[in-house]
Image (cartoon, rainbow, N blue to C red; front, side, top):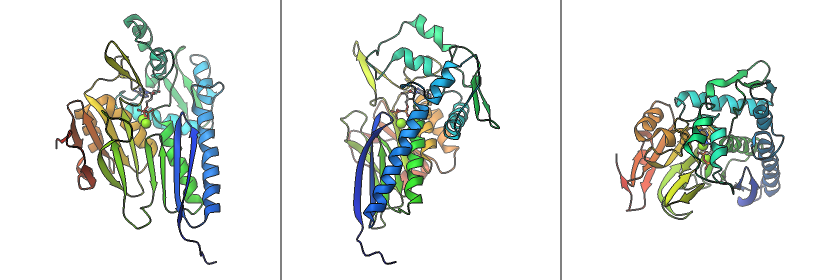
Length: 326
Ligand code: ADP
Ligand code: MG
Ligand code: MG
């Protein structure tokens, strides 16, 4: 069959996982593209319904309600994401910790109830945070939290998983060129139509949304950023953001204001961007350089930018207020 159509861009915005998801498909077959978008929307909704902690009756909420009591059997989706979250909790030495939920809830950042908790309140919950208490049974997809009061939160990784799943669906539909933005998590399929790489802006952590400090060229990869500008509140002149250091129970203060990961898998990138943010420059860089095919851009409080070796020739600084440090 001949394909007479010319490639056009088919764009759609969907709202899920607490964010706007933009899908841009470049293809001659508009009908096919629309089908792929429809299926993607369903899939992302399904992932949200299984993994959210904000609605009733998700699989994650069921696990949390049964902490210290029962194992809960979950879908392969949820089991896979929890497995990954536990893996990165371990790999990051607990900088990433999927059991940080009680502390996240206490701060309420991003909700109407956001506030600075008392030290006693943090102390009372901090002991519950320990990813080693997540017990996984791979033969039955059962998940158990050892102690009552423990709870998991997949907010730092589920969007990454959704990005991978959308990409898979687009590919299954035969699409070869696409750009997906899940609230700042970018996933690309192939290169641009003219064969050149996608040029993706790195958000300026100190400026309004849409202003970038640098551009990174990617082909078929994903780019995920964690930053202190995403969700926060300000009290007495101090900014309290939504990435928690599981060791202190406070928003992470390791000197980083944004960490960006470039790699093939978006679930990995999401977990790692959060991990690096908490770990800080030195340990964060060490972690990323130890991994194959994973690159990072770290922006520190003093407006310095650190880029991993494998990314240097595709990274372009575009803001003079920031300085390349390595
Ligand atoms: P964003 O949600 O802005 O993309 P992240 O991917 O970094 O940012 O995820 C932040 C979310 O992950 C928080 O809102 C919270 O639900 C959860 N979280 C916060 N701190 C941690 C942590 N240290 N480890 C795992 N999850 C975390
Ligand atoms: Mg993340
Ligand atoms: Mg993120």
